[in-house]
Image 1 (tube, rainbow, N blue to C red):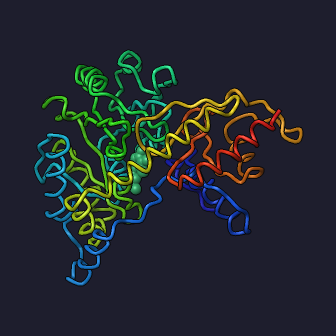
Image 2: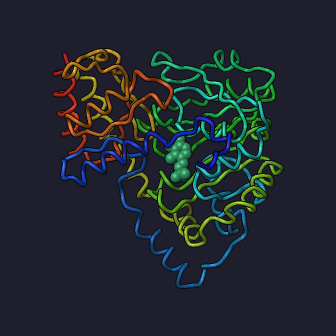
Length: 398
Ligand SMILES: *Cc1c(COP(=O)(O)O)cnc(C)c1O
């Protein structure tokens, strides 16, 4: 056996992908499975974006591009920041990568030294701790509860800052909770970060997927000083249903963007040229598809929240963004199934998949084992039927 790198210490396959694989296998066996596991919109990529990609191929945009992205896309991104966030960036403050995940990975590689701590509010996106560890850093988890709407308070943030704190990752709206920070809350966190010299990493990939009229604020827009201490991450995957195209981007101080570009130049080089041209169309073309998608997501969210809260022992908040709910199942844990207790979220996810034919994601890898994550990136019909099955399975537990 070849010994693997010590850097991989404890690194596991993403559980979200594992449960998707299991439900896919059951489907292939002919089982009728309803999937609440999806981490991507169920809508097709809009036609105008596909056309732009086809045009790019026909026009010969099929070669290496500049490592950090074509100027046309950088300019579209700069324009977007100006339009949506009142933020001014120049080309050398923007880098395009192979997905938002890749942007975060490059960033952490660029700024972390061994022993550096990165504060992450839990529940967190599963990839943050893994990427921090891969970059030699240490995740410092700040637990949040439903009482604070799953948001990290200013006090909790301050309480976790040490001499080794290098950065904080804020993800608003959040995967997995859908929680979204208000401008006032962001201001409070930003002030503390400035005082203590902590780099703000803001993952704004769900910026546009917000409900009840909520409008996301970019933390960098709080002040010029905050902007100088922040790196904003975004991408086209979630907003434009383009997860397979692999285009994400980051904006921040020149020196950090330059370091990220060097890392990218020695690893992946530029993101796919064709996808970059498609992203130009996505970001600067007509935006009405986004509004249509948001309206549909909001209807499904309402059905999901009402349906879950109607199940005895299950509780869930009404999230303001993204396309997930994070449901508290602690009231039904400890129930017996054929003599086996359902001890935590992984048992529950397996139970629901095996007996109800519904795929959900356990909360454990997101930092809280008393919860399950359900995605409503699936039809309203599936939401209704899936909830009916979950109710029957859970209320039959004890
Ligand atoms: C989906 C997601 C991303 C990035 O996805 P990409 O497809 O790599 O652009 C980043 N952060 C969070 C929290 C996500 O859920």
